[in-house]
Image 1: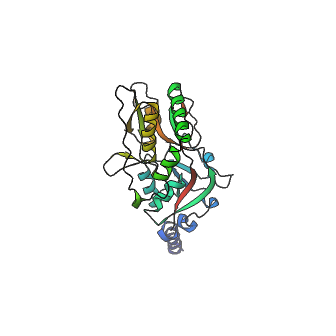
Image 2: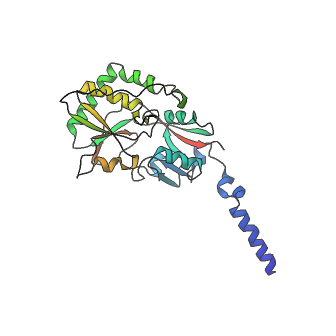
Image 3: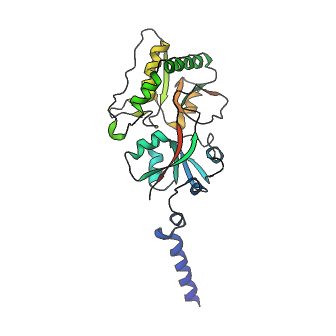
Length: 270
């Protein structure tokens, strides 16, 4: 009897811990929104700002955990190594990432965000007004549409031929410190020579001319952007690219949207 009990326990342990028979793999990779129920979702922002309830799509899914990562590289690695089941991103970024890895797939959430916007301190009201006015000027002149076509439409990993936009240098003008992380390609990324590049950089180059201000980029991880903006001891940056979604911090404000984005979920194919 004792030998039979030990043998049964051994078989049970094998079934529970065998890689081919784990509960996780038995569920399969998510293929639709309902498959994301009780799964782990990876995001690039603080979990204090995105909760499971914030990523629901008409109550069609609710992840068991929202796990934050400081870089898109870390998040993508976590997805590929199954430390997360899915990652929240934009349709444009997912298309870009799939162009480099055909083993990735997309689940549409059928929801448009409020657009890509810049984050700055709520005390910088003058700068907020200037930025919003500059964005409207570029929109009215068709510059935003031109930049979107040049830096976003049909851009893939193998099609990054557009050189990083050059920033003008205006003698005697105020300098705005702009935080960027390169974590939302092709909106922004770090080029092979280590320079910030992409749509956002080109946008700031145009805004520099419209506002008559110099732009200096500061590279900073996604999870450090809020603390850097709110730092009281030193001026680390004046605004940050990028944000989409709802902001729940009273001390920060958002500009008007400068680009439309659709949210999606990136998953593994197998």
